[in-house]
Amino acid sequence: MEMGEQLLHILEELSEEEFKKFTFYLPNVGTTPHIRRGRLDGASRVQVAQLLVQTYPREALGVTSQVLRQIPRLDLVPGRQLQPGGETGNSGDDANHSEAANSGAGASELQAYERQSLVSEQQLMKLAGKMGRTWRQIGIEFLGLENHRLEQIEENNPGDTKQRAFNMLLEWRKQARQGATVIRLHSILSQDGVPLQPEALDCLRDTGRA
Image (tube, rainbow, N blue to C red; front, side, top):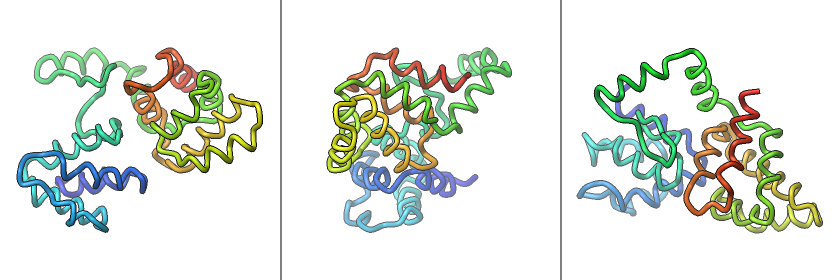
């Protein structure tokens, strides 16, 4: 796949809100000359992919990776296997060794599942039970939901914090559409500053493997 096609494929995986964030952050990354913000206003995904190739003939994928980390869409970072804490695997002999160590059928199946599987209502309900009163902060600050929608959810579920959190997560899944995968949600909620205990995310994997 040519670089331009690969970039376009990545951009097409972004929701409308994520694409807006991508074009917002893009002028601030990469080496000079930077892509001017004025050239990105109203640009389509095809046009942005073309601008990346034209401006950074050799570095377009690297620049794209930097922006994806800021959105964050770590699951779309090209050619990288994310490890706990956001670090990536080693290259060269270490990478070959790691690949061999994880080449078993079970590991391959799990990786494929996490890349492709949409998060289920059962997983979301279990996760909602771990959020408590932080559900609203998580929805606005990390999942990009609008406050007025969360106010509606709060009014529709008086006194039921878990149901409010569940409906907030359902709203995110609805907006994310095909991007509402297990690994994406896990990546978002694993960021520094998310008011959740690390073990709260275990329900995403545990339910998915059942």
